[in-house]
Structures are given as structure tokens and as C-alpha cells.
Image (cartoon, rainbow, N blue to C red; front, top):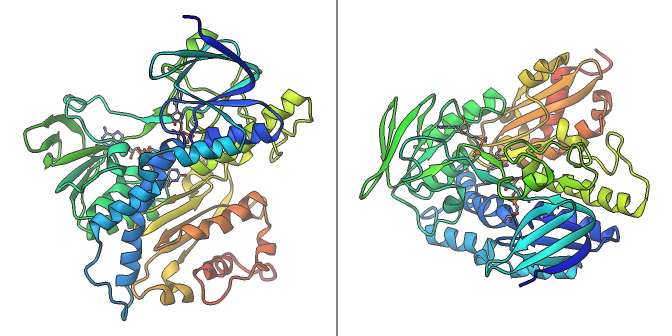
Length: 474
Ligand SMILES: Cc1cc2nc3c(=O)[nH]c(=O)nc-3n(C[C@H](O)[C@H](O)[C@H](O)COP(=O)(O)OP(=O)(O)OC[C@H]3O[C@@H](n4cnc5c(N)ncnc54)[C@H](O)[C@@H]3O)c2cc1C
Ligand SMILES: NC(=O)c1ccc[n+]([C@@H]2O[C@H](COP(=O)([O-])OP(=O)(O)OC[C@H]3O[C@@H](n4cnc5c(N)ncnc54)[C@H](O)[C@@H]3O)[C@@H](O)[C@H]2O)c1
């Protein structure tokens, strides 16, 4: 049987949030675009990552805030079945029809199946039923295939059929006990959620927890998890795993842990396997390095956007790259000017120093830019300003037991902020102000004129500036 052959301007492989945005911008730029998806349109974030995990965590934070306010009656705490039902509603019961409808309304063609490069500007899609479609791109192919969990090479681990983030975020019930291998963002978020939902949780981490954020923030999250009843083994080596009739057993150098389920959250790697990269001379084991327009090094038609390029494994940052990539693909195809100078419309400059991230634990960690140690390692002459978030008037109104901390990092040579970290209850919304100031390179002298409303937690900005010093008295 001969395969159907279609020619379009742009082929996007992967219809996660990032692929959808690449396709949308390209269509708006005038390109005929087809997107290829092997599973659900909407990708990891919608069904097994950001959205369901935050749906599990939000009730935990609301309950914690209510419990901290005398006069607010919280009754019986969390209603677990109702929390799981709301999570199911947020994932549309793992049905992608609404996203398929959106693709249709945006003028993006959809081909369902597994896409593989089969030559220059050519993608062959194999449908679940076995039929194939060959898609030839007049201009470009964008690889937007996301990432996949890393399962460490520990004897017995794979055979024990552990949960990955997919099973954790889509769990239909809460296990009596949950062991979590890993100490990163997924480990601490899922420990927070499952502990509050009633599981006995043990975290087994190779190093400390949250190694990529400021140590003072990681320490507060670790202490809070302890206080919430989570067992934490840090600097632990797991040597063997076994699933018995009832439990999963983990042998570690700190003792044996038994739990009803085991979640592996030890990092993710780009989805480059089985993508046909060999057909164009690329090694699937190597990182897909790109320039700031997301063009893969050595090609003028191949782009890699989102998790697959390893620049920043975050939905918002991938979508930011997607807007640049979709627009630049269209500009290059149509012969329009390309704006690829730093901070231009067609580049993802912010990936290098202004990536915001929120860890939705209780307390939350919200950060952007380098940590103090990272900034020093980059050779920057910095000044660090710290302040106790609990001393701000807005935080004493927010809750009685408010505890938190904030740090601003100033580049002394330029007189601008380059990094900020907040740890405390519901600090997520504070980070956008910092991101705006960093990207806008707003001089600290001018920031004094951005007056935070009283009594909000945002008054932390005034306190950080006071800690740095008034321009006149400098
Ligand atoms: C538990 C968890 C929680 C997270 N929480 C957050 C959060 O709160 N905030 C945040 O910003 N980020 C969060 N992330 C990260 C976020 O989910 C990713 O950064 C984001 O999903 C990346 O989007 P993407 O489109 O690049 O990849 P994906 O969402 O993985 O989409 C890739 C798509 O490509 C498809 N695909 C892959 N290969 C092929 C192929 N060969 N042919 C056809 N289709 C293919 C896949 O089926 C998938 O639909 C979280 C991640 C996890 C695991
Ligand atoms: N709120 C958010 O923004 C959010 C939430 C979840 C996930 N994510 C994204 O998903 C990505 C993946 O998350 P993740 O938590 O899997 O990875 P991660 O890279 O954040 O953390 C991996 C952790 O696993 C530990 N580890 C590695 N091997 C181990 C082993 N054998 N035993 C015990 N611990 C081991 C590491 O020391 C590290 O602490 C993150 O990079 C993040 O960007 C973001």
C-alpha cells in the first residue's frame, strides 16, 4: 500500500502546549501548518503534569491558609474524593476534544500518530492502526516532543513497576504509603500533595532537596515537609528495589523503606529517541543544541522547541520559545525581516537569565534569575539583600503564623536586579514583578518609584530596596 503524501509549509511534531503555540504563531504568520501528535493533544502539562499536579496542591494550600486564621472554620479538612474529582475535571477526564476543537479553530491541521523524520524536511507518521502519512515541509520542521522521566539504573527498579509523574498525577486513589525517589520539584510537590491527602510519605533523595534553588528556600521547604509528617532521607543511595505481594521495598544505605507505591522523580530527559534523527545525520543520544531562534545547530530548516531542547523544562518558558520560533519560521519563509538581536521578537533571550519558576509546595518557592552562588560563579559583582517576609505588614494580615524569606540579587556594575527568590505561603504571584524588573533592566533608583500597595505582601519590594539603600544616601 502506498503512503499518502501531503505537502505543507511547516510540520510540527508534538502537540503539547509548546507545539500548539509554535503552530499557532506560524499559522498567524501565514503558513500552512500541520501538527503531529501520538497521544493526547495538549501534551504532558494538561494531562499528567502542571494542571493535575496543581489541582491536587491547591486545596492543600487553601486549607493551610484557612487553618492559619483564627475565626475561619475549616470543618473536616480535605474531602479526598472531591479533590480527585476536581483534578479529573481539570484534565477533562484525559479527553482532548476541547484542544482538538481549538486546533481546528486556529486553522492548524492535525495528523494523529507517531512522527519520525525520514529525510530532509520530511516526516513520516505512523498511525496507531498502522497506516502511514508522509508530510513534506516546504519550509521547516519543528521538533516539539517534550521530555520523559529518567528511571535510574537500580537493580529491580523497573521490574517493581514504579509510578512516574504520570501515575502520581492521575492516581484514582491515595495509597496508604508512598515512597518517592528523588529530591527535585516533582518529589517535593508530590510529597506535599500525597501527605495532605492522607498517605504516609517517605522521600529518598540522592542529595539534598531542591538543589537548584537558593539553599535558604530549600531548607524551609525541607523543614515544612518534616513538620507535615514527611520522612526525608537525604544523601541516600538506593541499591535495590523489589515489589513483594503487598509493598515495594527499597534498600538504601540509610535502611530499608517499605511503601504501598513508589514514585520515581529523578529528572527528565528530552524525547529524542525514535524520532528518526539518524535519517538526517543526528545522534539521538546527543542534546539538540539550538541558537536563540530555536534553530538546530547545523540546519536551516529544523527547529527544536520546549522540553526537547533542554533549555528550560517549564511550560511558560517553552511557550515563550514557541512564540519566537513560530514567528521566525514564518518570517524566514515569507522573506520578512528577522529580529534576532538579543531581546528581539524572534529570540528566546530570557532563557539565559530570566527564567521564573514556582515550586508549589507549602511554603511555595518563587524565583527568577540566578541564585547568589550561580551569579558569583558567572563572575558577577553582586550584592545580596535578604529580608524576612514575616515582617511585612501584608503578611501579618495574610495569616497569623506567616513565615517566609526574600532575597534580591543586585548586579553592582549595572545597578539592576538580576535575581530574586521568595519562600513563603502563596508567594507565587510575587515573582512576575521581579521578572519584569530583570527583563526591563529597571535601574534600582527607578524601582523606588514603583510603590507597592499597603498592606500587601508586595511591600517586600520596599523593604528589599531599603535594605539596599536609598539613592540619595548611597
Ligand atoms: C509532574 C510535573 C509537573 C509539572 N509542573 C509544572 C508547572 O507547574 N509549571 C511549569 O511551567 N512546568 C511544569 N512542568 C513541566 C512541563 O510539564 C513541561 O515543561 C511541558 O509540558 C513541556 O511542554 P512540551 O510541549 O515541550 O512537551 P510535552 O508537553 O511533553 O508535549 C510533547 C508532545 O509531543 C508528543 N510526542 C512526542 N514524541 C512524538 C512523536 N514522535 N510523534 C508524535 N507526537 C510525539 C507527546 O505525546 C506530547 O503530547 C511539570 C512537569 C511534570 C512532569
Ligand atoms: N512547579 C514546576 O515548575 C514544576 C513542577 C514539576 C516539574 N517541573 C519540571 O520537571 C522537571 C523534572 O522534575 P524532577 O523533579 O523529576 O527533576 P529534577 O531535575 O528537578 O530533580 C531530580 C532530583 O532527583 C535526584 N536524584 C537523581 N537520581 C536519584 C537517585 N538515583 N536517587 C534519589 N534521588 C535521585 C536529584 O538529586 C534531584 O534532586 C524539572 O526540571 C522541572 O523543570 C516543574
